[in-house]
Amino acid sequence: MIDLNPLDILKKRKLDYLPPNFIRVQISDFDLYDDHLENWITHKLNGRYAISKIPFVDENKTLKLANFVGFEDHKEITYFTLACPYFRRKQ
Image 1 (tube, rainbow, N blue to C red):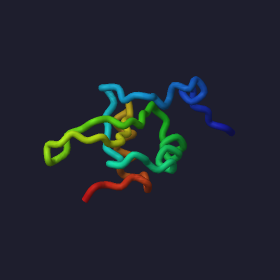
Image 2: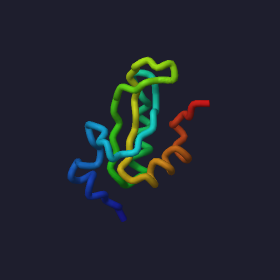
Image 3: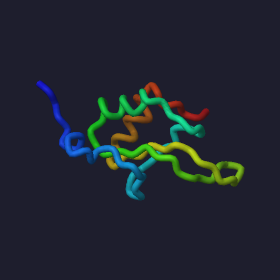
């Protein structure tokens, strides 16, 4: 049995921007992120998400760009940070 997600069918699951109500986590300081990470999200999670490059202020108080992933459902970001093997947490 195929489990279809209505948001995927309507192409409304992945957003092109990061809304302010989404909870987010930084995934990289670099220009690119791993495509495996996005595949993991689409197969393991169900809610809306966004992957976007946005400016942020680092610990040295300089403005930088970084890739962030954000989730509408706060439970999904918890599962993502704990279970995704492609997400590297900073030490």
